[in-house]
Every structure is written in C-alpha cells, then in structure tokens.
Length: 313
Image (cartoon, rainbow, N blue to C red; front, side, top):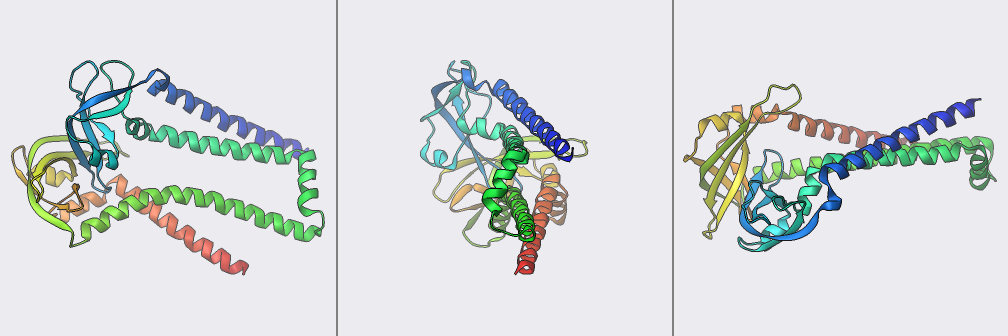
C-alpha cells in the first residue's frame, strides 16, 4: 500500500512538471514564432552600447529593415560581432515580416525567462521520471541486486543514504552554478569600477533621457542617459547608461556627464563623482538585493559542504 502511494505521488509530480514544460515550450514557440522566421541580412545603421549599474556592457545595432525603413528598436549582438561590424556592414538575423528583424541574441535574451523555466521544469520532470521508474518493484529489485548483492543490510542503508546525499549536493551544485553566473557579472563590474588603472576620464554629451518610474513593490524604477563621447583615438561611442534617480535629476539634454571608461572597452562606462546618495540608491534596488542574497546563499552552501565533507572524513 505504501508503495502505491509513493508511485502515485511520483507519477503525479512527473505529469505535473511535464505539463509545465510543455506549456512553457508551446508558449515560447507561439510568442516568438520561430518556425515562420526566415534568415535575412540587413544593413547596420548605428552601433550603441548599453551599460547597467551592476553588469558589464551589452551591445546593440540599429538596422535598416527589409522593407527599407530604419528600425525604431535596437537589436542585440555579441561583443565579437560589435568588434567586427562597422556602420554600413550587413548583419545576419531573422525576419517574420518585412517590418520586423531580430538577431539570434534577441531571441536568446528576450526569452531567457522562458528558456530558464523550460530547463528547470524539464529537469525536474526528468528527475521525477527516473525516481518513478526506480520505484517500480521489478526495477528496484533489479537495481538492489546489481548494486548491493554482496553487501550487508546495514552497509546498504548507509550507502543508500550517502548516495542520496550526493544526489542532493549535485542538485545544489547546479543551482549554485546558476547563481554564480549572475554573481560573477556583478562582482566583475564592481572590480572594474574600483580598479584605479586602465581607465580614462572624460566628459560625455547627453543627447537623450528616458525614465520608467514605478511604485510596484517588487520592481525597480529605471533611469537612462544616452551619451556620446570620443576615446583617445578619436573614435565616437554612443552608450545608454543606467544611472540613479539622483544623478538623472541633475542632468538634462545637452549637459556634459563626467564619466570614466575602460581603455580596453570604451563601452564600459562609469559615472564619476558619485555621492553617498547615489551609492545608497543603487544599494536599495531589488537587483542588488537579489545579488547579495545569491552571494550569501552560495557562501553558506560552500561552508555547509566543507563542513559535511570534513565530518565524513
């Protein structure tokens, strides 16, 4: 009777996670209509960088659409593409209709939440399916016969417990790996900002401003200043720079914003002369809070793993 309950529970969980995976996959295909997208090449009109408060820069291009009109939206590209592409060059992507164009990076980044959800739900469905199969008496008996044929009952239970613990730590490791991807970008940006060398001070002209003020509980307001400046070699760069609300209120279109850019990558821009209020505002955002929580969880998990390993030894 107990076996029937466990098997039924695993079957329901497998079905539930599989259903979630199927729904997310179907929604993703419908939302982005990938099957009707056709490969096209379009001309690059402009190159723009985007620099957030907590992450390294992202790279975009503005293109001429297949219908001959200039796109009102920016299309995301890789760092390698940014270095290899000049204004006027053609860039490959996909088009659903003549007034639409998307790069491969647009599909990946715009659908990141979909892909993450599909991966997590699919992984959980797979784990539940394996557990369901191993709970079937015939397979369970076969597994026990193969794995523990020559071992005593007490040792078998001990090894089963250790095996479950190892599986648990593997799952924790996968989750922490995802955390480290986000934390790494946050720490890399922080280190680059604090390093006193390899950077150049200059002033950038502000030619556009944009803000999205929200009072929702779990959403941050955003403030952007689009600036243009020249590096030491005389090359012009355009960057959409995320700033704090305090900095945003201090500057208007046509003003000069004091910045520092990295010599190795001029799109990696930092605002000079941040006040305590700027630092305070940046620290109170949900993005910084999530990064700090991920960092704390990762450190705690590492400490727990080391402690557990030393205890077993």
